[in-house]
Image (cartoon, rainbow, N blue to C red; front, side):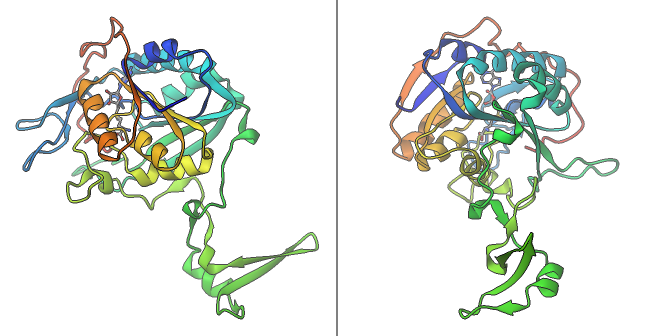
Length: 322
Ligand SMILES: C[S@@+](CC[C@H](N)C(=O)[O-])C[C@H]1O[C@@H](n2cnc3c(N)ncnc32)[C@H](O)[C@@H]1O
């Protein structure tokens, strides 16, 4: 199968995918229930994110109704499930507003035993409220179709390692090999293992080393001006951890197309989609600029696929942190 990009609602797109499509890795970054229309930054002086005076184009509406958001997502996951490869996995990216409700809904679709745990990602942006409690992380729920023990996770890849703590380096890494590399050795059950300081240790589930700023600033090529665009490095880590070259990676809420751009660069096939015209336009421009060829399919929109599909609740006082 070639790369494919669909315009349309996730549930409709998944229902129209050829029966033979098997997805190895799916990343979904839906609206978070912020309670605002999200707008682009198209030029100097504009700010992307929650719509305000002088914002760019309306990219999508993120209503504040968590129940409506969960129902939409659950419908999409149910339509997605038959297309998952038996050893495939799903990363669901949310924030505090809806993550716990979505976890319960995703358990209903994939089964509780498919849940592997969370990744906590600190984007490092978002203003702290002048007073009160500021949530500075987002959460990725990880599901493996074959259960937790079957999750593909290449923890030894360099992108999935982090430096040892200073105290650990000074206390344990006291020896040097003939090339001057610092190391320590540990003997477990009679077998001796050598660990090099410069290789770092396996990354845990708290990711603090990828700044959202990479995707947000107009100063770097990566930034498209699309609201809530995620950094390519975050997607590269997920794809390197949980997919292989030649695998099929999907993102049915692709926004600016970050997942698709990374998938193509890493030799994965992609199936992408979004129901927002601005998202599709942004993704197409991004893929075209990268010289990526793909088939475009305009999926028929569902009746719910309008700006009114997620009724806005009172605007949340918190800033969007994605
Ligand atoms: C947080 S943004 C995704 C940002 C993206 N990860 C990126 O890096 O640019 C959420 C996207 O979900 C899309 N969306 C929301 N509900 C959808 C649905 N039911 N089907 C398809 N796309 C949907 C929105 O149009 C929006 O582009």
